[in-house]
Image (tube, rainbow over all chains, first blue to last red; front, side, top):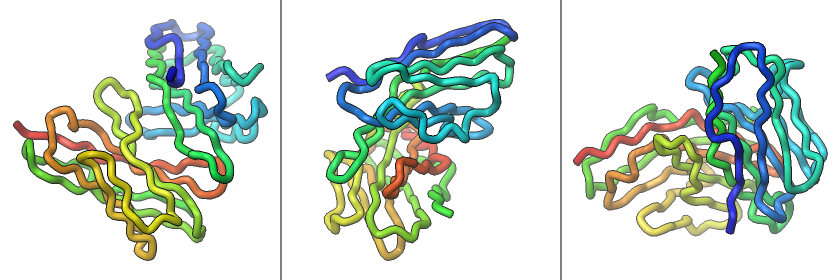
Length: 116
Length: 113
């Protein structure tokens, strides 16, 4: 079975440029998460979608960050304009949540972003 | 507040030996899920083992097992016959009835040859 698929795996961009990270969740999962991981702050939840609807975006750092989920099989996280402090590993994850569901969260391989 | 605490930032174990990683959590809920994830240098987060709080039996996956003490709110991970490939960061995670997964700060495990 295909897991959570993220692209790109690595991206190096210049400050001020737009960055778009992409994610394909596991088929059948109803929940999608975007996390950011840094040495200083650990694993942070940025946004959570349920059935393609954003439920909690309180972790999105600022207006430069935006996320969409146009359908059940695709989501994007966009940073515009990017700044060096955005350098991190960005994880997309999905799960099937609900009563009698597995509730296990599965992560993609992550997108390593470096902003210079 | 619901929190997950991993009090051991780093642990070492000799190859083929057994090591236990500790995790405690704070909750007022009675039904929830607990997980251990492994993050090797590749940074991918890999599920190691999961436990439903309503199950009294401790979960086991090959060389990995947990000691789930619900009253004590403790969820430790035991790795038997440690292998070099077990070297990684290990994260404990808790999921209550809501959507949020709460992660600990991780324990770095070193396996000595």
